[in-house]
Amino acid sequence: MNKDAPAFQRGREIRGEMFGPASVERLDEADDFQRPIQEFVTQACFGEVWGRPHLSRATRSMITIAMMVGMSRPVELQRHVKGAIANGVTKEQIREVLLHATVYAGVPAGSDSWAQATAALKEIGAYD
Image (cartoon, rainbow, N blue to C red):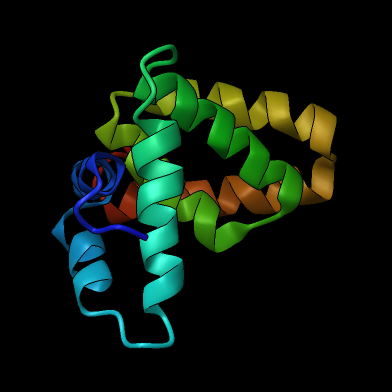
């Protein structure tokens, strides 16, 4: 990874906007073992994909939440629910994405995801 590459810098910015300063600090403080994955995710995922202009960040967040439901990835689901709120997705939209994904991913994955999303929304004060 090239830390001077525009995609890497754009990825740092997007990570910070979505997940807060702690996400960028985790990147900056990564040890020799963790650094390669943190840099890859920053440049490829956030800088090159999330930074593309043809889908809004809100749309990308909703797609990602649906995928996390389908793959039963609770930690990433919580992280992306919080990021979705930062990207302008409403609690109601998250609810609809969860319902839609539950139909296609199955009730066990969906049910777990509802609990994880609820916890994430409560944690950031977006659940009322």
